[in-house]
Length: 344
Image 1: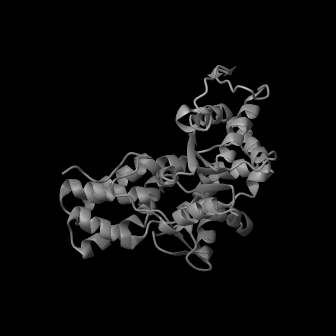
Image 2: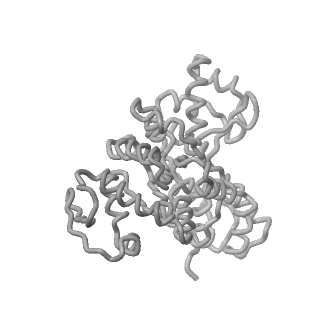
Image 3: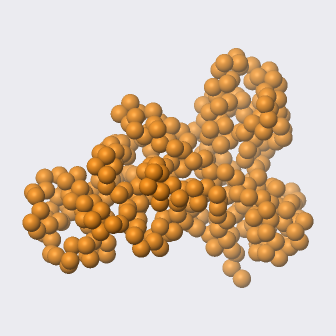
């Protein structure tokens, strides 16, 4: 039997565990006449942002009145959008099989009888007008956005198009720091008001059931493994993969060593390199993987309280630490304390 666990980022595994509540909230929001037209999904690397985006996109693709378009944020998104809208598989029935021969920035278009098309926005408006008359909706999915010119230009155009009441909706994913920079751009006040959805940890009961079934182990062993993941999506895949390969669910030094290596090389090294020196000071002040008091962390980090508060909040929003109760902090990611020990 092939290993059912997937270590490649972005691929939807066969054993995908859905975040039912958050997925349903997003789907209901876009289907509601009064819902938000733009939603942002954020979380640290490995939380499953891309997989969730793909899952939701597939759900809408199965709806007869929805058109799903995926855009790449590192290329001209307006031209991608125009080209995708114009694709014959989407527009053929709407335009009654007409022949087109217009050219704009390398994309060929022609719409007989329409007003002259002088720019890509004009073309998009004509296409969306036909889609609106056909009583269809468009979901635009963009993965891993950053604060670049393509994203900013497209977001500004999107705001213009929804003001004109075109049936379009936008779902974007990104790391917290990239979303933060984008939302705080002085030219994108519209984006600042967009709701952010931070991905919650996977349900431990669902992970336990999955491990028990796929690894053919006892519920007790499955629960022990599930707790070692802390609900972190990539950790769930890695630990399941390793246990499946060795045919033994018992946690020992050899298993921990391989588990740590995957987490460190594929996620934690990159994540840690993107942190500021003050972020790292707080993290290095933790003395265990368990709950630490803010008072002790302040003392060990030797930071002023007002500065500590700023960077503590940043780490919480990034999904690296959490506050289980007032005055207490803990590391949110599995085996992250052991990783920090190696950095020290």
